[in-house]
Amino acid sequence: MGSQSEASMVSQSQPRRPSRRQLLRTTALGAAAFAAAPVLSACGGGSGGSSGKATVRVWHWYDQQRDEWPRLVEEFEAANPNITVEERQFGDPDSYLPALQSAVAAGDPPEIFAPHVLAIEYGRAGISADLRSDLGEDFLGGFFQSANDLFVDDGKQFGLGWMAQTFGIFYHPRHFENAGVDIPETWDDLIEAAAAIRATGVEPCVLSNNPGTNGLDFFLPLITQVTDDPRLLLDLDLQRNGASWDSPEVIEALTLVRRLQDEGAFAPNPNGITTAQGEQMLYTDRAAMLFMGSWVPQDFVQDAPPEFVEEYRVMKTPALTSGARHWCSNQAGAAFAVSETSPHKEAALDFLRFLYEPERYAEVMNNSHSMPATSAAAEQVADPVLAEMTSWLLDGDGAPHILMGPGSSDSAANAVSAVIDGSSAPEAAAAEIQSGVERAANR
Image 1 (tube, rainbow, N blue to C red):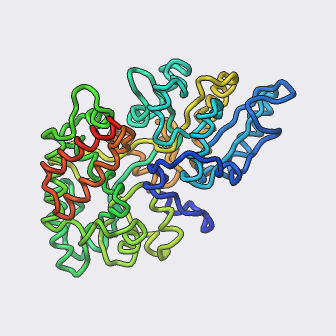
Image 2 (cartoon, rainbow, N blue to C red):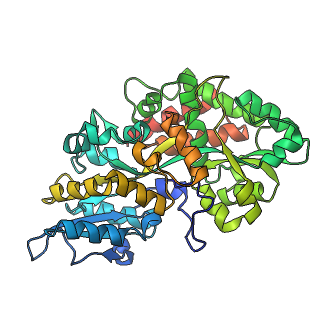
Image 3 (cartoon, rainbow, N blue to C red):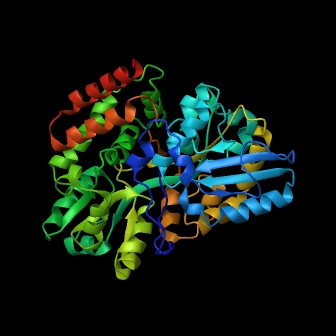
């Protein structure tokens, strides 16, 4: 799920990041994905070799570090001659997930793997190791809390953030100057600014909700803005501690979404606007602002005019009231889990410790133009726009926005789309999320 603000950092040949819908879609079991996945290793496959070495298989789909892995594997194997690392990068989540599920069904998951949206499920089933126990609180304490919380259930942690992400509003300062308005502090300010900007012939803020899961990145942190409690969304997602989606807090957040739509803060028809269309609206001067994640500047470098890349800026998402915290989406959809049952679990943990050694990890994140998941690496982010967005996480503004519970993502996405287009009132939409989650849990 995310990458970076990388206005000057990405090669023109780098492929686009998979969509959030791709990251969250679950697919049927299948073995076809194995054939397409390249392997980087000093020796053959499987969880062990004839030489008696421990083999650590690493499976993921994270393209951003494709140029970093050969060096990392070589360095680690040189320092650990009794461990062989096989790094396998799949083309996208849709080819990855069936392969992972097949390996798990066969009782032979890779030693280290991207958990997709199955981190909690696999942890509860004893497939993923409890990294809180295996790596310790001191190690995990270096990660953003919001990144850790995504993988925590019943006091155990079943994944580690590899790349973090956050969301903000990208904008061109010229449109604010032309309209004679300041950067908005609150949502009320945004509504006022939107009216002035629209009067200049430019759409105000683009909210892309096609695919429909995009709107969750906007809506879910509003629940945290309403409550100042980022753990509520985690409880809603996993239906813990009596949390219910039809609660007043959720209704208030949905009501704000509807108000912003009704009062003209957004460009028309958010449900019909794709990410690429939203980006184009901003860099072709058809819109003044774009709400989107920290990977979007990569796309700007690839697609936008160079003068726009030099001039655009990013602001925090507005706060609920003046002086309140600017809670924004942040977690780590790109993550790693460790097989609990592998005979080479300890070797896998050693490789993770190696990857996250502070200077090494910071270098990998900077070289790959990625947003890190640790505070120490965040302080070393080189790109100025990405550094700005990362600073919000260092300030503690990160809020959860990735749903892993049964039925949560689909039910919430459908509800947000219905609220945006006016086909459902906030109260009814909140109730439908809860009923959808309950139906999924009972399947």
